[in-house]
Image (cartoon, rainbow, N blue to C red; front, top):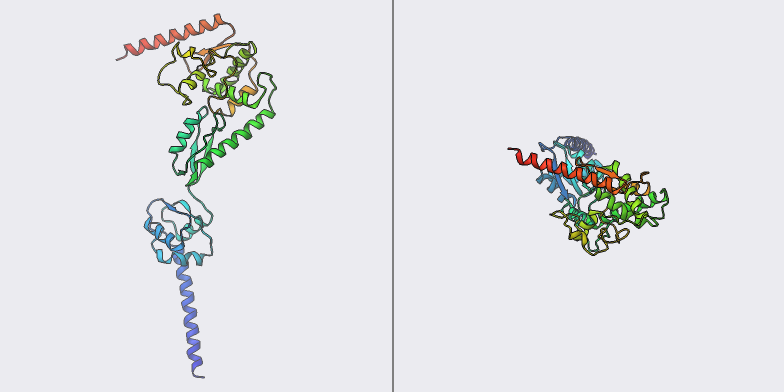
Length: 331
């Protein structure tokens, strides 16, 4: 039985070693990392534990890459999620593991302004950081809801477009159900088209119901809309902007999108309108006005008669001439 004391000593030694190992691993998990400032690290899908440790060490987030798989197992916080992470300065291995277990990835943001055309939105998507993939089937004009969209690294551009389409459809369905019925706008597509014009006519939210009322009044009296943005959309081939003012010849262009020569609404939207413009056309202001023109201060002057409208135009021309003179006389 002389081996019994040796066995007991071995068991005690193993026990002490296990306690020391547990204490050591717990201490390492709680030790601040080497990063002096926040660090962003991309951990691709399919990255194994050892490879994760190497990438985190190369980025300066941890300093014991060989211990990483053991630390993860010891923490009991599995599985870890791949992705793009921004770890804070001096993050402990335990904090790094917790962030990855909960998938606290970097969230990117893309803001789509109201009134952009599909071509403009697709260009913004093409340059949006951390997006991927191609859009093989461009969406129709007016089908994308302007808003701020949040996404993670590697999000497919086509998936973002699909989200914009779903959001526009859901919003239009909801607003259409709450509308004031108007025979001038018999379909959701007609309302969307008029909203896209209203969106491009003014940047002031409070003016949109008034401008919508003007256009509806003109439609009711079988007057042409005579909206410059529809001509710009036509001449810019969907870009929505021109690098020059419209000319008299432009306004004579024979095309359904030219509302100076064509009756009624154009064949489809000329931009992607926001919520306020959609509400404006479905709940227009009470007004008998038939005309509007810029007032020189960012808004518009409205008129019921052509004579009053011409006076507003003359006033605007005087303002423009005075501004040109002041610019010409300034040093």
